[in-house]
Image 1 (cartoon, rainbow, N blue to C red):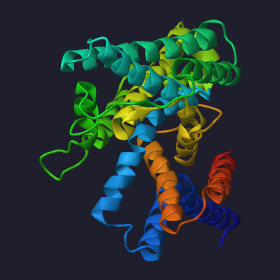
Image 2: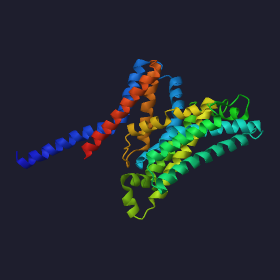
Image 3: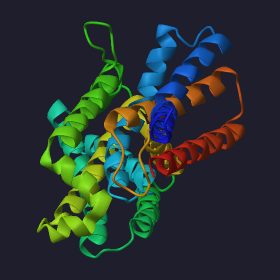
Image 4: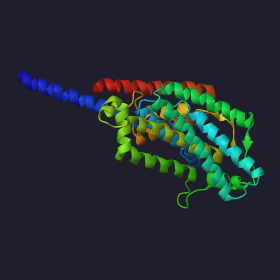
Length: 347
């Protein structure tokens, strides 16, 4: 056999090996999710019950909504550390609005509750807009801006509530509309899927279409890959970057509204929640690069559910909360490591 033929065979074998390895690395999130589902069903017979599945889906509705915005932010090479506090502040704004406006006789109807929701979304848009202006127009680092906004949002949340939990009481029109027998407990006529879950997946589908088939989505990827090249092409990258953070703010607002619907209350303590870290983890586990330019909606959904299933397994086996943080941290590091290996193999 000639030397040239040997080289061709070696190259072909190498490509085949890289192909298998590349497949495993590229699709590590779905593979991990499938393994976790199998392990969970073995560990706990209650895992695959309809009740537990719907419980997991309800719990992840807020995370899925926020994760769509976080995905866009990370694709541009940014980060949003304010997601938890922004969500908490929006939930507090909605809770206080419906309670105080009810006392003034302003939310004694469905229209008044919708007005409170609209007011909450406007406040969420303002938060996202402030992030967008500081990061896109003034070119401040996203890490510093969103960290500062998180402190500000947490402070405002405590100032509004004075450290108290705002309760939506049974019998209030807003409670009947948002909590029980309202939105939080409503299900579809077929399959009895909770409406909160339906809302989350509608948003997921919208963002899948936007990121894959629209100019806006292509520009988000382009900015993350090489913003300088985008600017040299005569495209206003600042406009697109602004809207990325603006939309993320609105999604945090929607998440805050869903949170109030699920819990029937609002508290500044939600600022210490894991909405920011879990959504960032879900996006990264789903294959997005923190350097920007990579990531998909479907992979992000898988990443979010990897975190969700891990948390559910640990709850089912009654593992204390603090060890759960350590395990989640290890999984995030593993995901980033696999991503680094994948990048090196491509290189």
